[in-house]
Image: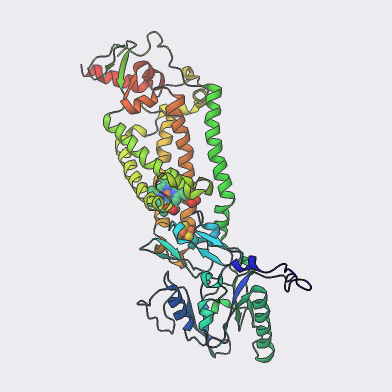
Amino acid sequence: MSQATLAIKKISGHPGPAPGADVERDYQVAKLIDTTTCIGCKACEVACLEWNGYTFTETTFDNSYQTMPSTAWNYWNLIKFNEHEREDGTLQLLMRKDQCMHCADPGCLMACPADGAIVQYTNGIVDFQQQNCIGCGYCVSGCPFDIPKFNPTTKKMFKCTLCSDRVSQGLEPACIKSCPTGCLHFGSKEDMTYLAESRAKQLRENFGFEKAGVYDPAGVGGTGVIYVLHDVTDPEAYGGLPKDPHIPWVVRFWKGPAKWIGNLAMLFGVLGVTLHYFRYGPKEIHPPKNGDGGKP
Amino acid sequence: MSTRVISSPRTTGEPGERILRYSLAERIHHWVGFLFYFYCLITGLAFWSPYMYWLAALVGGGPTARFWHPWFGVAFTISMFWMYAMWDRDMRITDADRRWKAAIKSYIENDDQNLPPEGRFNYGQKLFFWVMFYGIILLLISGIGLWFVEGIPSSLRWLRYLSVTVHVIAALATIGAFIIHVYMGTAMVRGGFTSIIRGEVSTAWAKTHHRLWYEQVTRRQSAGR
Ligand code: HEM
Ligand code: SF4
């Protein structure tokens, strides 16, 4: 992003216009995960740990190849394994790299009450700023993918950053770098969508996966992480990828109309008592009437 | 003006006379409760709206406010139950309250001469007490749902939504009651504010606002003569 402003617009003594000056750039980035070529080697899990400075810790063995049941505050990238039984009774071992989806319409950001704890960059990356996080956990309520994870020691939330630190320096995310099969790609959203669609087409036409398609859910405005799935009609089979993710309506209501209703109610309360005072003023103590009270 | 508190068994009804309305313990409980509630109020409002987030800075910043808000809420709950133990009997709704409630328009319009006499607390004060009492129960239960971030598994995430909805509704209900309470205690019913600080009211005040209570106290006083 920082380099964007240093792209050359005009050049002195140059014959013709500056090269690339009229080129339109798509700053929207995306990660493409082709689940059909993932071999579940977990190189991306290790790369993620290494780049982000976490060490491997003890985990739960769950009779599966999966490293742990779900992502953790210090484990942002997890291959989800699922032995999926197809309609014809054959088994299919599905592997899906689970991490933050970097929604265009991020529910975590909508739910967060702390100024600056979550930001969305113009390139689409949704990033947590732990120094501003108050650890309330509202982001968990807002996220349809169950991604933000709480560090109980520091009381801060963590999740995949899409390697915003690397991307800002023109590098691809660490997971992409480590993938041996090339099932992970990184680039502009437009390019990745094109690549994903052509791969899905190939799967449909040449490999007999008639339902192959691209997962880029519209309910959250599209995502900065898109999947190619063998069967796009059943994303749930891939370790619980929601079919139609959207920000929960309770969160939308709470962060939208409820604020107005509540704030107006409080305002009217304060205004109401003020007006009451203007109109009626304080209560008088009535002069003691004759023979009234005072007598035991 | 000589200030005599009715602790002696005699009342004369002379104008300068003062009467004890709140014991020291009652006053302390009231203000301890206020402190805890007020902390929850301003930190809660900070979480509620980005335009009020600066309120968190008054008490040490967002993370500090987030840490203490639930604890102060628990403290307020304890203090509320303490007040309950102290005032439960005084706060029961009586027939006098029902008669007073029917004439509440006169109260609002400061036409107090036309009001049926009330006991130690009028219907409005009792209503405030019960809104706070049931409000804090709801706030505590829902607050616990919000408190422990990792405590709710994703399969039970509807609990999060329920917690936040109940917490907000209960908080708003208590805030509405609180606004009216503060207004009445400071601006509208003069003498009320001093009574909850120093404990005393004038006999005229007692006769005007809480006639039945006044009669009851003075009768008790004279019975003990
Ligand atoms: C009884 C014990 C209470 C507990 C355990 C509790 C706990 C919580 C928790 C954990 C939150 C989540 C946000 C955060 O802490 O950052 C919260 C939010 C809030 N609390 Fe409480 N609280 C309590 C009492 C109160 C009281 C007495 C009020 C008074 C008005 C209040 C008003 C609020 C408000 C307005 C919010 C923000 C809701 C939103 O973000 O929309 N709470 N509370
Ligand atoms: S836990 Fe942190 S990031 Fe999540 S909503 Fe609360 S302040 Fe925002």
